[in-house]
Image (cartoon, rainbow, N blue to C red; front, top):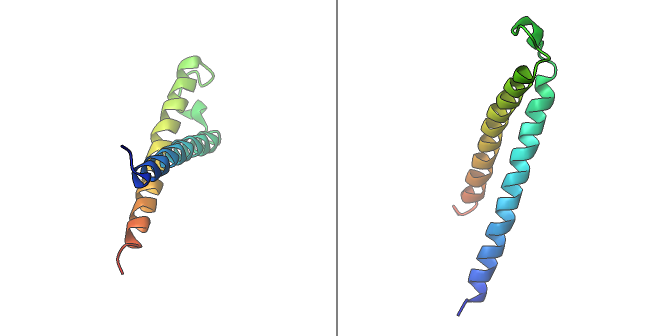
Length: 85
């Protein structure tokens, strides 16, 4: 038999997973937006090629996931800080 507290914990955990996914997507999107201002034509031979776009996507994912990881760690630590009274 499942208790009410267990259901509440599972529901809260599900919402937190959705929030984490949203934070990752927003951070990657912001990193992509920021990378649009970088002049890749200075660094790459063919900045309009599919390989160059793939490189931009990978850089955006790397930067965005690091930023999202920082934000989620900060959020987790600040929530845990509330338990110290």
